[in-house]
Amino acid sequence: MKKTKILLVVWAIIVIVLVGLLTLMGFMLKNNKEEYLEMEEELREAAQKYVLDNGYYPENGGELKLSSEDLYEAAYLDHDDLENNGDTCQGYVVIYTENIVKYKAYIKCKNYTTNGYQE
Image (cartoon, rainbow, N blue to C red; front, side, top):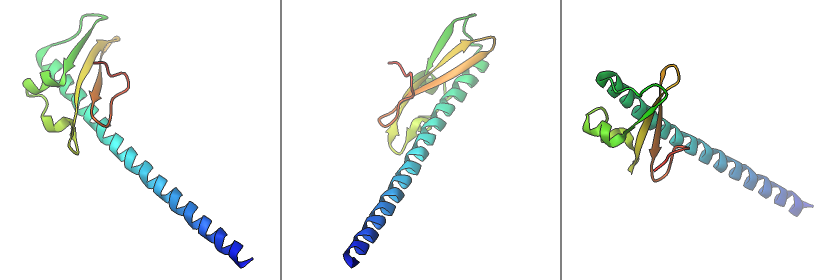
């Protein structure tokens, strides 16, 4: 009877520790993803400034693509903007019209890739 109680307590402790570790890992992964989403936003904002400053709009119904390299060369983006803990990313922004001009940023990193990213 005493051994059963001890085993039950040990299993309860193991379960609590595992749940705690999994929760911590979930928060860490969510935090890391948020940093990549912020990089996508930086890229999108840089493309938007570039388009506004240069009048580089897609034709009606068409789309344009600006790469992160284009934005680096035009000084609208710094290489630091697409780096996360040593993981340097590359990307592009698709600019298209649907009654208004819209921007969709895509990045590819060692540890993260935007859904829909195309080489």
